[in-house]
Image (cartoon, rainbow, N blue to C red; front, top):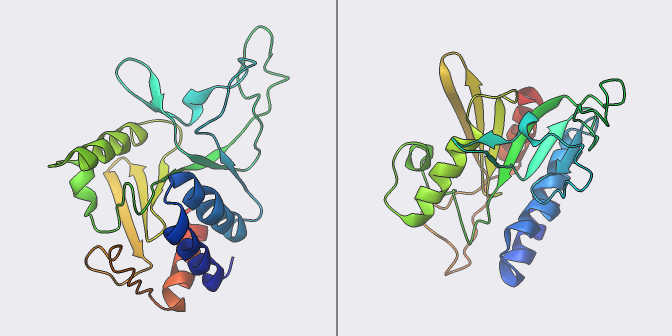
Amino acid sequence: MEYKDYISTFEKYAERDHREIHFQNEIVKPFLRSVLPELFVEDVHSYFNKGGHHDFSQYAGETSEYISSQPDLVICDNWHTENKISKENTENEVKKVNYNAIVEVKSPFLEPIFHLDPLNYLDTANTVKESGLREKAKDLLRPMKVKKLIFTDTLKWEFYYISDEGIIVKTIQLHNNEKNPFKSRAWTWRNEEAYEELKRFVRGFI
């Protein structure tokens, strides 16, 4: 995915439809697939577990009561829905999936993160929106098999790695706006090198 296509797709939906699903399916997923062509980038947020052969706990965050925080996307090297061992689905029949990372996407209009410091939604929060981001991030970052999280609203990309030392965060911005540009539609994108940096970091991170 070229940078000009990334920007033009963003601006198309900025003018027409602000729903998260468009930024996820038209920008984030194609971008990741173009950078990681050897891997699967799959939507799991709306996955319907009709057959009962899918184990969400292999990548979903946990709350104190139940597995709840499904990410929007997973990055894996052998995608298959039947990943759960059961009486009907024996270990020999299970398609082993190695989940490399999980991805959470937010609309830059409806629930933006580009203007926030990660600490605003990982530790403390003063608004309802930020509180929601905080709880979502905490759920997704609970100790589990998948130790890598990508959090993005397409203007800012955040990379979280869970290690014994705690949570390591790397941030890459694709815009130069210090304040909310949505009212004026004054988009100020960073140059091509910022985009290339993002691509390089994604490859190294995964």
